Length: 129
Image (cartoon, rainbow, N blue to C red; front, side):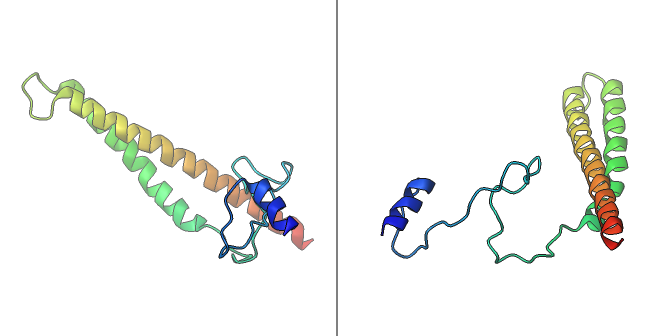
């Protein structure tokens, strides 16, 4: 009973009869990454769970140039549109800005993917020796 009260006070959440007490402990700061895990593994997720870096790499490689080209296309179209044109200059500039933001996001994702793949490759190479 005292253990339940202590764990309830530590988590600051109301505890019902049907839910088990929260036994997760925060991961030490030295082990957590920039965004990293906040809690230790619960044991229910697979040990070898990984994101699909290959698919993310393929999508980033395909869409980064596409978004850059769309940004340039909409920006040029926006500068050449007249005062009475159907998509207004501000609408085209908004589309150019949105495509530019998506290009930036996909480029950052591409850099993150390449860093993760490189670190996995280095970790695998040093673990074998």
